[in-house]
Image (cartoon, rainbow, N blue to C red):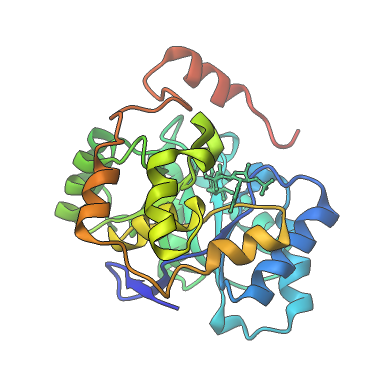
Length: 283
Ligand SMILES: NC(=O)c1ccc[n+]([C@@H]2O[C@H](COP(=O)([O-])OP(=O)(O)OC[C@H]3O[C@@H](n4cnc5c(N)ncnc54)[C@H](OP(=O)(O)O)[C@@H]3O)[C@@H](O)[C@H]2O)c1
């Protein structure tokens, strides 16, 4: 598996498996098992996905050596602030059945995220987390955190796909040494992307599917990807992207698909802040 080197020297697989919206525990455990069997070693979950226990079960059942795995989970807004963050970290650790996390991320730039981030920094220094980072930080939030935090985040996990390519965001991340990781790498299937004629035509040249073209495009841009699927064949298909290379021309063609904004979520909207803050994952 190709890896990227994070700003603290940790190697992170360039492709992993995401489990957002796989809420049924049996389905989640099965999907992660398929992913591990297919060769994925990075699993991306979150306390807010309510499936850390199912992910943990699949990991334990796999018998794969802990050092071979790269497990990401995330802290939800409800648990922000220094004290709460520490408590929530240990809850996630227990649910996953692990004694350390490879990458622990702040899920949203909301509420007391500085307090929460200080807890992450301490847990990192204690060796409980191999790398710390954030999600959904737009450039101005990210730069502010990079300037003021003791430890620069290793990763920023943000929405990124052919319709929202984050070109300017990537420049800022590069400047501060923050690795971009794409959520929604397949645009969550929006705009009928799997039937997009431009991407289909590119795929036909290599005998690859639209999903494989998109995922390969990300990898060639140096973007870490964590596609989600509940279907075994698609899980395998999405991993089978390391035996071909898109041409410069293909890359340019996909560049033209960028809308430059998200059609999924508007982080600058007051309604988004209200909605995210109102989502509770425990009493
Ligand atoms: N940090 C954050 O705020 C945040 C937000 C969203 C997501 N994430 C993470 O990023 C991961 C990926 O994002 P995502 O799950 O939102 O979206 P995604 O991976 O872009 O797309 C998943 C959708 O595409 C379908 N799909 C997957 N592979 C396919 C294929 N080969 N052919 C056709 N359809 C295919 C899936 O359907 P089936 O399941 O039916 O195959 C599902 O509907 C998540 O699972 C989560 O770990 C993080």
